[in-house]
Image 1 (cartoon, rainbow, N blue to C red):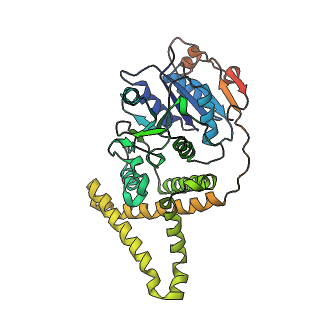
Image 2 (image 1 turned 90 degrees about the vertical axis):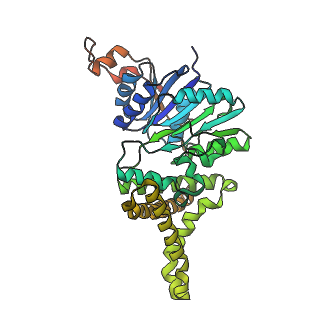
Image 3 (image 1 turned 30 degrees about the vertical axis):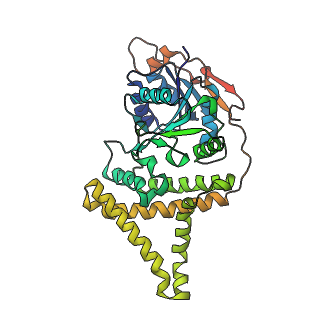
Length: 367
């Protein structure tokens, strides 16, 4: 049977979160016919994790490739009408696939579907505040809908991330292979140019694992900014002013001491205005979470978010654009499911599996 939905996941040496993701997918109720495809960065153990939950899944491996190239490997082999892209660190409700199929049937002329990514229920206090900061207008501005539920309606690339994004096969275009991230935004901008209709729905919610440490959060924001900077060089006509705000803010904060020497204390009015806005945003976050004591953390997260994103944007714009060779993929070709289950400890099944015997070289799938 040809699947209606092809679930495409890129992962990289994060077996625990991947297994949690697959567990939520394996618990789907009333789901339409679907298939699972996973691409990993050079970690053969991923095949065992995947096939423990989905014995018939396709698994591929790439080395030293950006996420877009890995996703192209999956798109090349997917058979479904709908390509559902998920991150490996998300979990979903048991009826996500049923909801997606229903929305696709109700909106046959829509080519792209997506929804918010919320903080998982079992998260730490730091992760909850982080999620709230991402979902706030002070924190993320025009892209805040990615991180919290908003009314259903017509959308564009500002509404979506690849942690839960579905695209009809008939309108899909290849991902850029030279972006560190934001490859979905490149695809969505191209689809917008082609006048492909897009729908945002809070029903298509996924639960996205937030960064566990302050350093992890700062690195994530820097990477987001870097990807947006690279994308702005690639598509300068699609650059929107809000994406420049964190960089302009960072430049102003860095220049503030010199401006003060040149113009006196009046030059610090902008700094004071920003800090007051961030404090107001932090107070709103603490109030929404009903955790007044978290106002300091929320304030810190907002400032770090803006500064790291701004610095990453500069890094992305300044990056040298060098040609990227097509991804070289190794496909797990017809694994022996009995052997995989045996290695997982299932009684009565052989416990030996040789990864190399089941790998086949495939060239230029990332083109």
